[in-house]
Amino acid sequence: MLETIPLMLATPIAKIILDKFYEGMGSKLGEKVVEAVSEPIQKLGQAVWNRCFKGKPGTDRLLEAAAKG
Image (tube, rainbow, N blue to C red):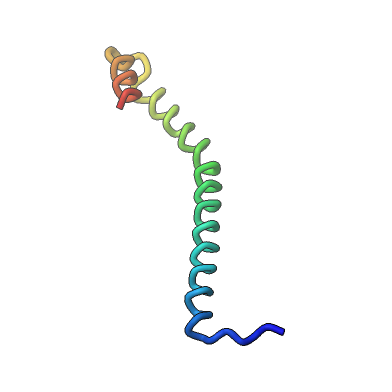
C-alpha cells in the first residue's frame, strides 16, 4: 500500500506537473494560432502589395531588401 505523501513534498511535485502541462498546452495552442492566422495574413499582404506597390518603380528592389531583412 502507498504511504501518504507529506503536503510539503506533494505541493512542489504538483506544481512541476502543472507547469509542464501548461507549457505543453501553450506550445500546441501557439502552433494552432500560427496555422490559423498564416493564410489570412498572407492574403492581407498580397492585397496591400497589389493595391499600394505593384507596378510602381523601385518596388522590386524594395521587396528584395525586405526579404533580406
